[in-house]
Length: 360
Ligand code: NAD
Ligand code: ZN
Image 1 (tube, helix red, strand yellow):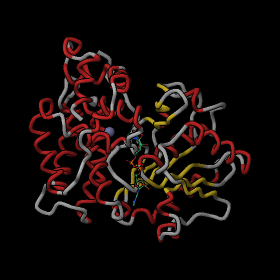
Image 2 (cartoon, protein in one colour; image 1 turned 120 degrees about the vertical axis):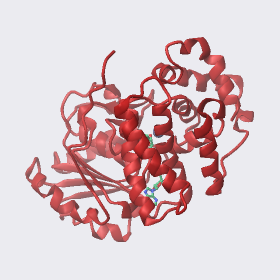
Image 3 (cartoon, helix red, strand yellow; image 1 turned 60 degrees about the vertical axis):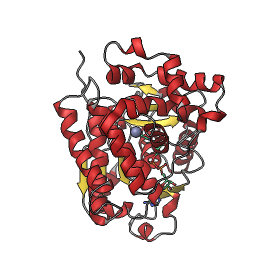
Image 4 (cartoon, protein in one colour; image 1 turned 180 degrees about the vertical axis):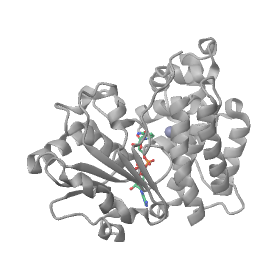
């Protein structure tokens, strides 16, 4: 068995108000390359008070990006890279401020500023040829674990696949729980459930181990306090916890694997464009026979926070659509292997997966 060997984030700052340390944190890097920074920022923050706290210099480039029309694309990264290099040459670093989409844009941009050609050439594991430039992530919504992962997920003309290598991992992350206070309740729920599901899937399968469980159990305890505890809800104390849970959930799945929900989620997202965390919630509500008590707990959280998930989606999916969705899921054999063990192929095939999608 090959044991996983992953690079971690070089440095992490955590705490309320830690965003104020951004400028001093990047100051030593400013002497690199053409001595300026590129900020990629979720459009939500345009005109908001946070922008005044960037302490960016006049030479820096600040891009506000609307992440809602679509998840990050290869074309978007390529044209942003070309524009930046044409304007001012190689920056000292990239600073990403936003959710999972912005984290992925910052990571991908850092790599593509030094690797020639289109980002479509590098979608996959260890295809990147050269180290990217310094990149720093400031998450403003918690759950996906994109702040800690070694992948920058991009949708290209042919595939939705990450630029995945050691150089993808952030050099620095600043975790300031104050920044997630403004997340709308539905997103707070969906993204937090992504963490919850990462931990449940990581522990419910053959690849779990003491290392992945230690992170997963801590993250699960935090999720339970945030979504089910006496003081559940979007309070400052809970935001402190959720930000840590997201990072630890990401580490848990990194050292184990995700399972049935994530495998189906890729099928749903790929064919219908459903957002990752939302897709997971739509699916997990139907996996009671597979995830037992975790499913019961998930349904309690849905009820407690009055979340309404869409029902009967599959009535609009013909056989060809279901087959296409199931094919995407079946192409993730390591997730099915983790979830069902060495004999997974005795249970899991195209028809079985189509059956799971028909529940939705
Ligand atoms: P997101 O970045 O897509 O943002 C979701 C919404 O929340 C957007 O409308 C955004 O404007 C808004 N938002 C963000 N911060 C806010 C704040 N503080 N206040 C108010 N609104 C705010 O959300 P996400 O779910 O974190 O990220 C999804 C993306 O992450 C997808 O593109 C997916 O492919 C990717 N992803 C990456 C990894 C990874 O390991 N790299 C893992 C899972 C998912
Ligand atoms: Zn996920």
